[in-house]
Length: 334
Image 1 (tube, one colour):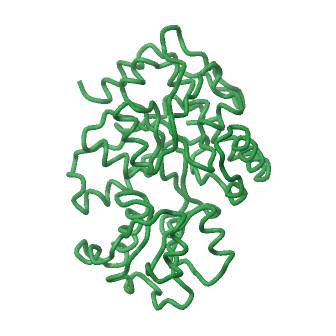
Image 2: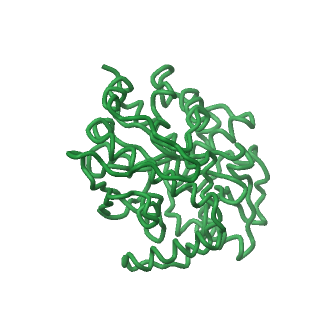
Image 3: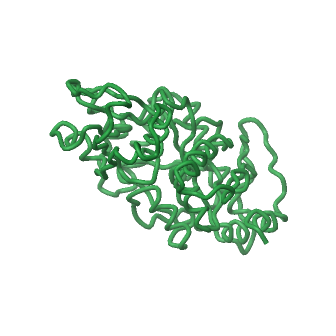
């Protein structure tokens, strides 16, 4: 039995969602299903499951925070091992894990790039680096390898005439996001990838410029999804529907509410949850970057990364079929 056949069997008893514009579907889980969903958070940030719970979109589903994650790949690996029930990561990282045999399904997009929120590949104003051709031998800082920033860099270089051998001459350097600006300004890096509040603060201080951004390269796109284990979905179809539809409604809420209202809500959530976090970073939130309404997933948001991963030999041709690794079945906005 294949992964998608297994998933479909597990969903065979789930009624189709009744979608009314602006209205919620029932979020109560049938008797016998778990109503507690374990997850990891991010320090100083509000993730969509937390926002959904705060807005009352999860009904009687309760979230259990088990700690903070260090990266998307770590988060979805924790979901695979059963340490958490839901995890989120860059779609290229999801592809790598699925290719390795992980029984997971992507259910809703949760971050991406647009004109307001994107990943910039920054250099100092006085840097001689002006384009892709100048990057041979350059040290490029990023939060982790084998994920969003490295895959975007690979596509950028490939589109500018680099062979895979040439690409290997560009050195990815793992740098904690909080150290990325200082590492660039001190000369430890030639290029530093920065996003969100870190990028906004660095730009405000001046003296740096983006060599390119992922938005300039690829246009607006959702970049990462929340995933669930297939056995969780099969055992808890009602909870799955309540959880995913609630998250989708939270995504849509950020897409349709005024910016200041979203920032104020995030700030209030962080203060009330009592994890001893700084709320200043939230003020730099610009948008979710999610392309599809309510986080609905599109084929392109996986196929663009799969093409690069196959081209570079990371994933064997035919090892992953994009339509089989995600579902919009639970998303009322799909």
